[in-house]
Length: 341
Image (cartoon, rainbow, N blue to C red):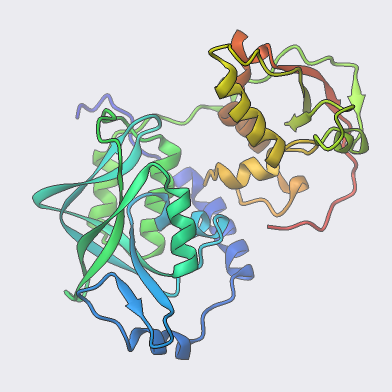
């Protein structure tokens, strides 16, 4: 790789990552050591699954991407029984597809470091659903005490995706997780100095939803009425204080119909009649910003970033502008809610 390629600058997110960890630590209930010992008493290093006499199962899972970060785990309600750093043998990590997501592939003689988590069966089942474009494979891992084990890892089901650079945000999440769980400094240094990334945007480069009437305001009560439960009220969503109204779906024979219907279903179930920023912040974790406790805990810069990353790509072209129309702005209350993560 040439020196002209961009490398990760993780120093700018150090302080807020620590604050986010403090938030998570204050909310996690740690597993009792006696429970952990009773589970590990039935461990077989040759198997990626621990089966207890009562039929309960626990899974060893090697995280290679964002799931090695405690914040990402928490946001997906994944609380490992234990976690430890390890080396995966005869495999390497590659970054593929849109956004440069982490994938694993066989490579004799290669190795990389990751974080092994022990998850309950319920958590592993949920993780399977999250990793829809991946399949589970069994890989050999060795911890830093040279003890071997089998573990599950996720491999992309479509390997034809071209190699691509990870985003700086994504690699920062990975590096922060590596540091948190005690991955070898040499491996972290390789990620920082050798892995090129797509750089983060500067705030002045953020794109935003345009053509929002500057003199039209609605209240939170107005917004809630448009949650999709009453057909007399078209669906509204609110991102960064801007309210958008769903105009309607294209004709069923339109080539855009299925994509728009799918997007509409997601929006209605997750964001209709609500401010979407807080939920998007949890789905689109960015270490540069502290994990917010509620909607009011988001900074203006964080909201602008969320608008740029999540919604501007959907509303900046004519196709999507047909179906979502900016109609006004939200007049927020100064009252701080007690909602939390």
